[in-house]
Image (tube, rainbow, N blue to C red; front, side, top):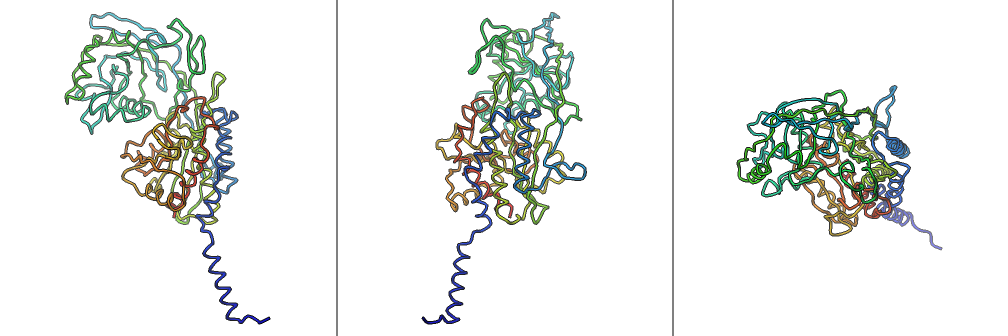
Length: 521
């Protein structure tokens, strides 16, 4: 047998080396291999199990969920990024909120122009949306239409009115017709409610009496001659609801939220003629709002609240970058609607799916074996469902917000949304002023053959929707929200893990990891 020459051997070794290099995986590709359907399904199924009791903020189930998420961050090797306790960083950012609801003892009376005073009955003539503290008062009445101001449309229900310290008579909902109606009705209901509350705080309403001109009396078992009927319940009394209570923070600031008395046609008859409301409505798109007259002059009220202090926790972890003065944030809320009356709101899509995604991204980022340039800061938010309090608290206490170059939000990524026509469509909701993240996603879908179709949801600043990205948008921080849309099980006890499209949630996790890794370089 002939001996190989030294030259031939060297050539062969060089060829083998170059061939192996051509097939060597990049760190980014190593990370991608760490994400599979099992990674997503295990977290999602566990967080949406009955053991978590619906993960309502401030309740035992939410504490168990937070411990699980923190343990997974620690197991994967992420550093804690929460509060420092006894000189040591933890995975938890803890803060207190006030949980409040309307008590049973309420009072409302209205005095007309003749000096006659009429009192009304709680649960029969009206319902109360409480303030974070009990408020008693008496004041003059003023009609404020729908109680909305949209400067871009030249629409202002408050123009040339003395509003502070008065009791507002406000219409339920928003305008329905014309340019004003078309624009406002595109906003999510949660955002509309928040807008009206913020305007009431801004202009100093003492209290609000909200009427539904086309509605009937509040329908409750107290005042209707049949049993309370719902999709999953029939009984002699109404079920308690997640929405019976609200949260307020920060607790060291006195609330300016006014109490809200919600009534129907009976209260309306003491306040205003329906013809006056119709004249006001007809003027909305005319450029000059009709000045409606009231039948009543004053009201007296006692809006009592039951208030309890609750401790809640964000879960925070990080992968330190080589240039730590710059970071990319990845977040998803882990709270949901809890349990009551023997039912558990498991919240598989909302939002066990989002938490599964950020844990999958964390696992992939660690699997790369290298540090990113920008720090990757992960957050599992608490108390999103009752006012985005977790992300609000974080931003209130984060010293230098200019370090946050992008916030990536994951909220409901496991279903086919009502507005999607294909199973693999996913909505990307983002600032129109920052389109680069859309482009990065498009490139990664093509390069890595990700089975997703992009659905454009670009918005202007201030129109961020109803998830934690809203708080980042308010701070001028660019955001990108992965979202598969609403569906019939949204906020229902039927939002279960067996309805999740695990393959789709996995593809979204893969795509978002690829894009976030690019952004962190």
